[in-house]
Length: 449
Ligand SMILES: Nc1ncnc2c1ncn2[C@@H]1O[C@H](COP(=O)(O)OP(=O)(O)OP(=O)(O)O)[C@@H](O)[C@H]1O
Image (cartoon, rainbow, N blue to C red; front, side, top):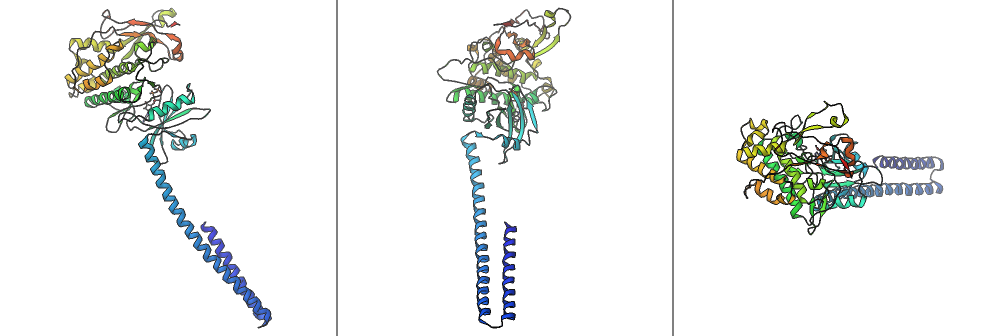
């Protein structure tokens, strides 16, 4: 624009100089004849016209610039207003693939990889930090995907990670855009050898309560009951104040208040799935309660509930070479709880620090053992869990449980893809378990339906 103005001014100056030269030449060659006066008059008129055009043009362009500046600042205000309103109302934004590409700098910073895709860090144009999840091989239809995104983005709770938007195209992967949570997932903060560190006992108690509150809200306080169905340490994120937020609603299901359960195919993560789901008896909020109980035990012990201790390869036959030995931490917890030796199962890294309150440990273990009862009816609701953890209701002694473990754990990773087509077989690890520390059991083949 500036260049254009300069060029126009130069042209006008050139015309005026030309007209003056014409007057001078006319004066010299025509003297004071009538023709000279005619040319002189016409030139003066032309010079006045050019000057008038320059003045009008200048005024017009400065007004235009002023209007542009005004519009620009109004536009920016509107954009800020819109982005603010979007956050308040919780309406998910439909992003274009290009926008996400720019925000993530070409999907450059990988935060982590899960079963359904990869998560990248990004910054939106309004400066919001986000985690963009790329979902590969999504089997749900576009309508189902969108209605789920909308349902989840309409729920608001301080302990739930917000979905800010999504991106869907007729072909290629789909994307979910979450708010970015600073300290990553809980697994990095409780299991050894992870990048996060080691959470203190106090923080572990807080995380347990925060997650319970989030699940209680989803189950009891929303219009429809929302089942998360994938509660595990990887889906619990830790913010900068070490509070916990439940994330990843990829598998979640809505359940009408009048329904007792909904039927859905077996998905989720081995080791956290409630037995009734694996038996294809439908899912209810009690499946989340079971997974939550399993997570609480991992939070207390700082170790995975299911731990492979040995691969039995002594035999040459194919059948026995598939047998694996597992250590099942909840079984150990139950025994130590009965013996009153609960401190022996707390993550030793925090016990050594000496700031672990034994009565709090007893309470947390008691709650977790209630949550992992095989019979869904025996499990508490998440609202009761919150009350128990906060000491508002007493934690009764949990009943003895058979601790049935589902054979699904023995499926190799490549067989995992066929989860829906397998019928799980249960194993009982009751009192005949040889010893607490080496409590092991074999898993046999999966029966085809
Ligand atoms: N909102 C977020 N903010 C920060 N980091 C995140 C966020 N969401 C996910 N992550 C990181 O990305 C990792 C992978 O997330 P993802 O949800 O794909 O994992 P997952 O739960 O193991 O997978 P899935 O449940 O889909 O099988 C997480 O473990 C976490 O470290």
